[in-house]
Length: 282
Image (cartoon, rainbow, N blue to C red; front, top):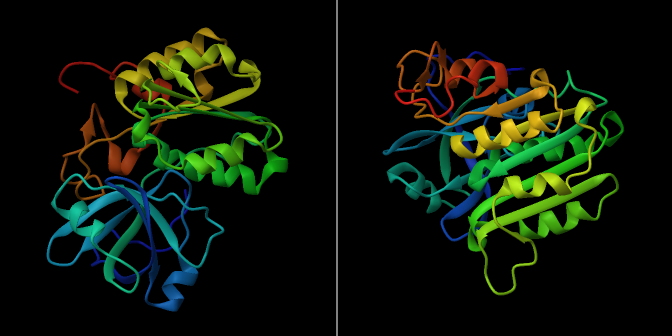
């Protein structure tokens, strides 16, 4: 993990929205730039980390960073408008002011798994924290083996970045598998659960690393499925979602077991989380 500056208790830095993209009904991407050119130039993050985005007059929310670390001119965040702050963020457009603290948390271990096949298993908007991995691998293609992208959604209309999946599927050594529990008439991919696709995935389980993000029930089932294929437990990671509020492990809202998701995660090894997934009370 890398951080450009300590932002433990400091106020958010002023930033400006430089682009807004409507991904699907209720899901949008904001690209923001820090107003201080020096702060923008110094900003660093690792895929899997998150920022706290501050909507002045409403509050702040944790949002995963979806852009690549080498995209230095702006920082991308894909957001679902589900609450007061995110609905307010949805109304912003280019030129609007925003506050930003971050980056926070522990990201994906991409440097440690160089040379491996990379398998991404995501569900719903879980693709947002993982898409930075896709960008990272594709920009540094020589460092990795096969890239297998497995994405599941509840309803076909929930899928975002369709054109990206089509484009990624045409790239060398890259496989894209998509599933929807409920399809629309022109849905071109699998109908059913995301774990149904494991039999179609082409990678070497013993030489691969898998990264998951999405609903905990999906990750528990997918993790057990990947282990059954022969993936070593030590090469299985997941990004947890909890009610993160302070971002520095103090308020306790995101605690799971002995860990604080905002500070110790959101990326964990399977070994760290396997006994807590789906366990009542955690």
